[in-house]
Length: 167
Image 1: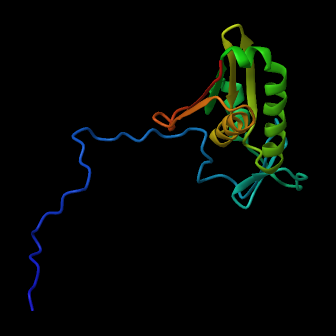
Image 2: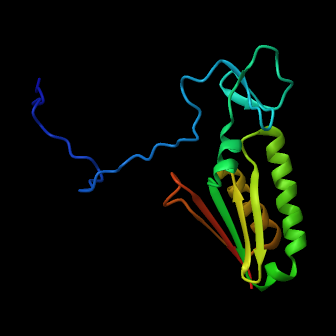
Image 3: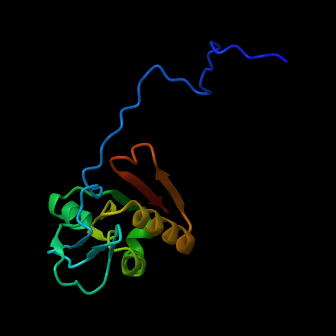
């Protein structure tokens, strides 16, 4: 029976000479969070490791949720950029769809919210507190109106970019 030598080095499949630096997310729930807490801004309840919409129990600690902290700091988790001639002519319909998708997702997930919607002649920029809402908005608009949708995950640790264009 042959025995494989212990000193044989195994190279990784993909090797990069540049080290990958992990960017810490300061809006991630801390590990030392209390078991039961409520957000004093939006009144969401942190229970069993998740933020939920429910009545605040008595004796709960106060802890600002990540969505309220992002909104206060003005640092979105994702941006959705809508551009093109079609967007300019159908802006009200598209924004109604955006608000409808946000209301549906926010009912299930309190940390997925719209931060701001800014429109001008170039297009519309939507800032969100969560990456899932931005991706959902982009997919919903693409499904309803077609066009070109690009989701840029290159810098997803800091901010997700979703772009939609239709002329």
